[in-house]
Length: 130
Image (cartoon, rainbow, N blue to C red; front, top):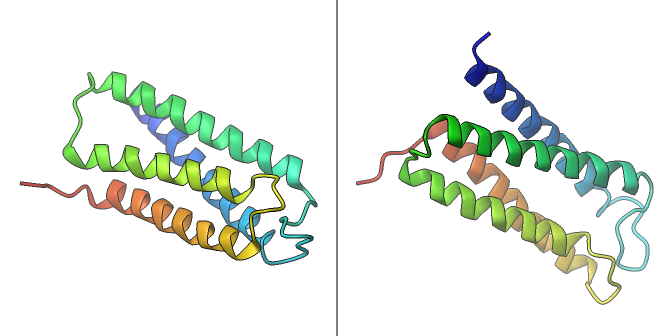
C-alpha cells in the first residue's frame, strides 16, 4: 500500500474518532450536568480519546504536509484557523471553572460545531479562490 494513502487513511480515521468523541462529549453538557459543569461520568476516557484523536490528526496532518512538499491551496489556511478555533472553544467549554455558565458552554459548543463542520466541508469541497 502506498505510504501517502496509508497516512491519509489514518488521518481520516482520526477525524472520524474525533467527531464521535465530540458528539458524545457534547451530550455531557445536556445530560447530568452539575453546578454549571458537564456530566463527570466518563470524563477521563473522553478526554483521553479526544486528545489522542487530535494528536494523531495533527501528526498525520504534518506528515501529509511534508509529503506534499508543503505545497498547499489557499483553503488550507482557513482550515488551520478553523482548527485553532475548534481547539480553543473546546478548551473553554470543558474548563473546570464554576464561573462559566452552562449557557456559555453550550454557546461555545455551537461555535466548535460550526468550526468542525466547516473544516470537514473545506476538506471535501476544496474550493478554488481567485
